[in-house]
Image (tube, rainbow, N blue to C red; front, side, top):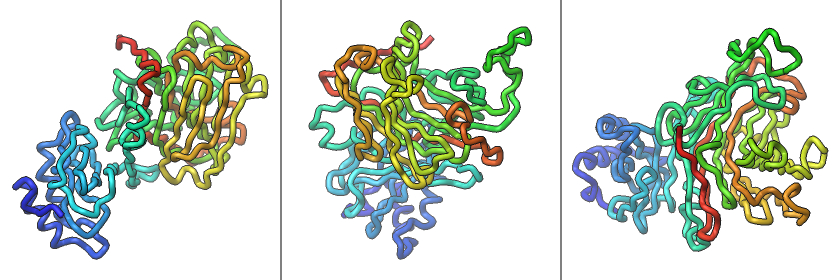
Length: 401
């Protein structure tokens, strides 16, 4: 076990105080508050604390209690071989950590829920931090850990704007923190019930569902279009879903050639869709020109997850040249294979870009009505990670305008 003398001097006193105040359950007591105030001046969104400043060193519990004053993230590390800082990815020797802590560290963020109280988010390091993944040749090629504050990073994300698809009720906004923001280590996409003027409204036009003077709801849809797209690999998103009739969140991809080819020729991969009137299931679907919901033959599956909105889940797709395999929390839930009939049924040999959105109502999300008493609702994203093997196509990037 590492001794308290191994800690930097300014943290040794707080750590000793923490051991004296430790409860029977192993929870850290008053020293953590002191440590936060001591380290706050050293911690900024641009430069996070290294591991030894973010960890409490104490012996009898497998829980962690060190917290970064900037991000509110806690950490848990492997005592046998040191730890890897979640912010800098640097390894620290076992002299800084305690025997008995869990292998690989877990970061925790406090994020407001619908009532304004805090929810606890346990941040998992994912497949990219495991030795098995490294042995299989996986490399993290793109990610957003949301370890900053404010609007989503414009070098990674663009926003769809307006009334976009599916006769949904929300107006998608851009650069509006009420609808999309990063706080306490998570991306928040928030759908709000509010009257919002449509700047594109034209009273001389009629017959277009998008030509409405006002929206009754606002939300956000983030995409990597014109930022990054990929061919093959594994896309992994850890998310907590909103709840209630009328919510329709989705984690999905579209072909980067959609402007030229249109939908459905470009191809669509729905990694996760949820509709609030079905609180115990998520949907995984693949749309192509040959197989799609318009034709009524889209290839997909509903996965039962009781009370799916209660917790964070990891939604992932493994995209190979002739197969798409879908996972929830590491368990395979669905697979679609290339039927060998050509691009109309299998366009997934060209780059796709990622979308994260929270819709209100629409042709599917609103088919059972909308509960007007539940708003605002939030889709919370803990991280987004894209992995590729060495022999796979590298991400295509566009210059930020």
